[in-house]
Amino acid sequence: MSQYTTANKQRKLAARILKCGIDKVWFDPSAAQKINAAVRRSDIMRLIKEGLIKKLKEERARKGEVRIKRKRAGSRKGPKYARLPKGKKTNWLKVVRPQRELLKKYKEKLPEGMYRKVYKLIKGNMFRSKAHLISYLRSHGVKIESDENADKSSTQKKA
Image (cartoon, rainbow, N blue to C red; front, side, top):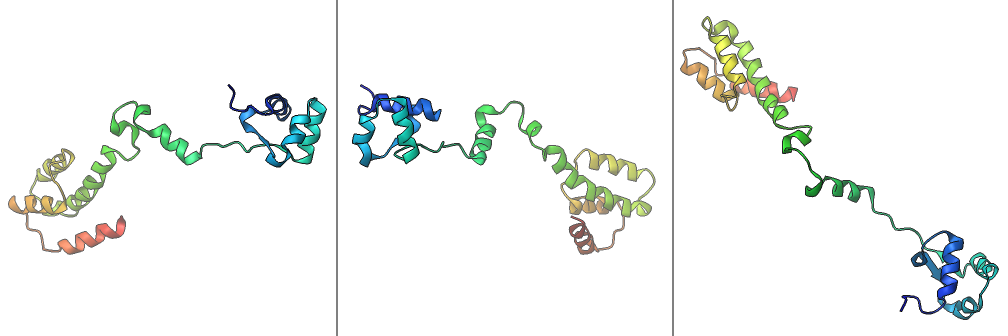
């Protein structure tokens, strides 16, 4: 048995006229007798003009919800960092650039050949932070003033 037992024929006719599915057709409950009496296409058209039969608004998925659905687990292909614009490389650059700036600053104080060696170590991701780099340089005989606070504030202003 159909979902719409009353006025099934009228509902189908109205759906065809309104160019929608039968689920989108709304009948005014107070005008049930008039609607049941309408047999011809012209009768249904008249009821539509009177506002006793209407087409329900189409419910669409919100753009945001659709976008989120598109990005969920089942839709992902490839490794995690291949998808992200800010992946491993960007995070690595955020650490490496300030370290390279610091190394450049102390280049004159470094013994010969050490600049290139430390530069390669920075590239190899040996140092966790600028403080770690400074401690390494100090342990290898480089005299660095304790202006670490100035270094920190200068990098914060740039970022």
